Amino acid sequence: MNKAASSSIGDVELVIFVVEGTRWTPDDEMVLNKLRDGKAPVILAVNKVDNVQEKADLLPHLQFLGSQMNFLDIVPISAETGLNVDTIAGIVRKHLPEAIHHFPEDYITDRSQRFMASEIIREKLMRFLGAELPYSVTVEIERFVTNERGGYDINGLILVEREGQKKMVIGNKGGQNQNHRYRSA
Image (tube, rainbow, N blue to C red; front, side, top):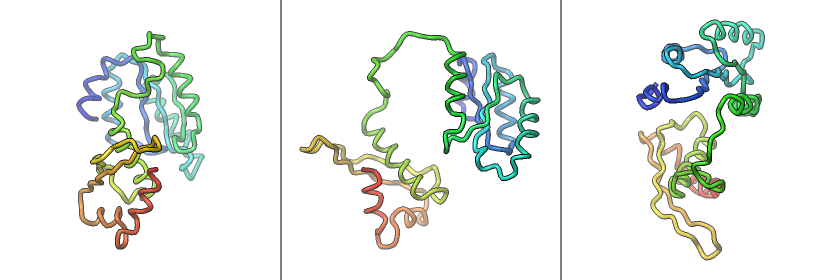
């Protein structure tokens, strides 16, 4: 768990702890130990349940997880298909206090358009290249201008760690570049 997340656990009103299917890792155990020390209620979201081959393994695993801590709720979900994501949202709404709006209603994010563009391009790369591309890929926006049609002309620099990853992104003789261009549009 990174330092920022670890240090902010004491300041939150609700935690959603996401674990993967029927896997339980030492990292999950470490996070759980930190959460036990906190005062905030914890919702356990068991993700990727749609990928669990043996559904009979799921119930005993959920019972095991339930015995690890007094969770506010345990919800099997699939972020990919949307299964029970609305259930999580309902639990969150029920347990968080209403508060005043700190930003105007039409305010979507506090991040810049350049940052959002880089994240959209990065997401498209992840979806297109899948597990082959590491999460360490970075997109730096070099040019971001409004064109005469009211749209945006954006040039981004894609940074990867190794030469082999560069070939994955560019493709044979640069053939993937056109694909990335249209996918991000």
